[in-house]
Image (tube, rainbow, N blue to C red; front, top):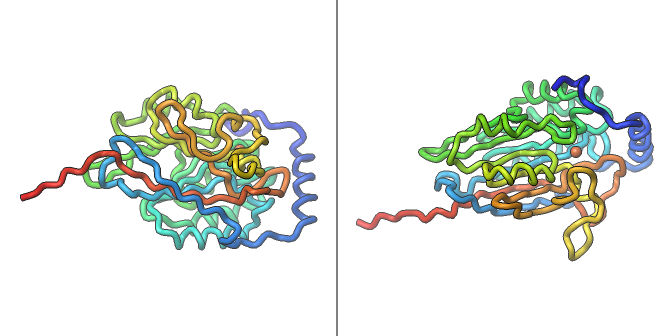
Length: 289
Ligand SMILES: [Fe+2]
């Protein structure tokens, strides 16, 4: 889909004006690990080979660079991430909000600095399409992030395999699940990156995916204490707005994300970095001589 074919929301300039007013009227946020929710979860995958047992995937999403998160904050956050012991990084979209050109170099520099032994893989969010998908794809290319928009890679460790797939943003109708399934090697555990969490309704029905990782909702920017959910649910995050869900045979994980969009406020809903540790349910054969 070409950038000019994307349907954009109305009043983009008004939205940006509101954001600028809020951003510039508040002091700059400085990165501090104390203000980050480092969520570590174990996810069991059926048929996961033992070589991928304890495999650690770190997900970053919804940076919305230029609002809550400025280039210095992002740079410090990347240093923090690089010091964590992980295998692979996934990025699930909305790197920008309503401005892009003045932040292109900052995002490129930060993504270039981001390091993981098995690489970096990303999809785009609705805001990236509204701002210019090709510009984001160019950043991916320049910073060695593999673009998984409607695409699949198969990771290999010894005799074991793990599919990592991605769909493009469903908000702008750029998703093409048929294309993903066509490319998908069969009978291999599969993780899907999808910016919008409610895409799980479609992806789970195919029975082709074991886990979907998403962002988009920002956890509603408000989590009800004790209930661990949010009343603020925007389009495409009404069903699975925050945390972990079982959808059919698939697990859906929705991150609270890092940045904010229109309102620079988060209540009981810290910015999130997610580490998913994969666990196999297979029994290991122990040979006793
Ligand atoms: Fe989004």
